[in-house]
Image (cartoon, rainbow over all chains, first blue to last red; front, side):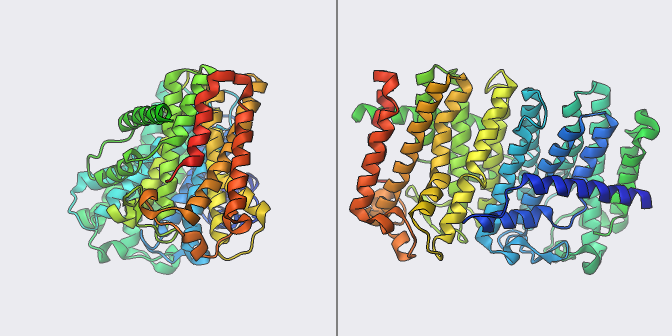
Length: 295
Length: 295
């Protein structure tokens, strides 16, 4: 696990350096906006989604530069979603990863615009010829990312999440909500590599299955952290779901039931990697890391 | 002018019908989100940017289906920007086009998400193979739209606009702000047609020049409307700029100076169309319409 964390950190650093070069400089009368975008996208973070893209890229022998750019685009989408999620009208969080959230460090208007700007930058990165020589590959990356992060994916899931505070949803809706809210983007992290390389169907399906189960396991762990985690370790407020009477895997399955479910999904995620043998060991370790995480 | 307005309305209807089919249905637990997106994108509006795309598309003989899809994507970006612009932490507007703004008709969280969702839908529309058979064309449409609407364009311009309430900017910054905030997207409206058709450089440059001057004339008219317009006719609050002591073309040039400037730009915009002869008459009328508009 120690080697794994070192590798995770190395990839995170590569993504941060690449993003630093891709994001607009904080200059001119709009410097405030660019500064807020950089604060959100370049600040501390595990860069888990980019890590999955890079490792899946290694596995299928995709071009490294394209993989790194896709990883950066994905991190921009993730960072934008966190900025907007933290807004007073949304989750109203003051702290994120141990630092003030963007609307606290800057202001609300700048936070809205910084999220909007990071979303557009993600597509600019993907669509640029440097990402892949074939335009059809770039267009496919854009199409799938917008699908995974838009109303059919992340944004739709966030809407259901908000409604879960006031409506009684059953386990099928909660599962669908998580699949959209978090799972779709984690799936995209792996899918991006298979688009860049244009792999065979069995390889694509194996990685799809892996990402699907991992994404759900990830979200169950998130729910468990909110229910049982430590505020200092998590770097953000915990215990919010129960306080809001929100339907989550933990409120529906109980703590032990949720732990069982996540262990089951983790085992299943690893089984999808069987065809790759030892070459997929890093992705197997990623599963364990995600389940064991404390923040 | 009567024929022009009829044509404008006909194009607007085509765009609304196409958008209606492209936007997600208001179904399932996320129905609230999709309903808000539809409220914003399908509601009343002149659809001026899509009109420019469709007419520029006719002029260069671009494929009609691709042009209509690009026009829809552009309208999604425009609609998203209005939703976020109207938020309490931004312009704090309750009315837009004579109806409650999205955060009034729904709520703030839904408005943030509806804007985010419309932005992603725009790229999904452009990147889809139905827009153009060549992936490089689709990727180019995405790249240019993200550039025009992101931190280097619309979103950057909005940031400067907010700073203009508290900082003293000179005419060069105000011009740059408008070029980014409104001009970039109006330029894209015309550019999209030249990307879809892959026109010669002289044609591209002529249309670029036209769109550039038109965009600035449009924004000056906007400033004039805010300074001299009627609230009922405009369908939104007026007189806000002066109330906030904001630097605009009107506060810097005065009302007569701003009128002169917009007339000059309008004439220049039309000169760019000379090479197209009578075939560009509709675009010439569009210039007059934009200058004469009351909302």
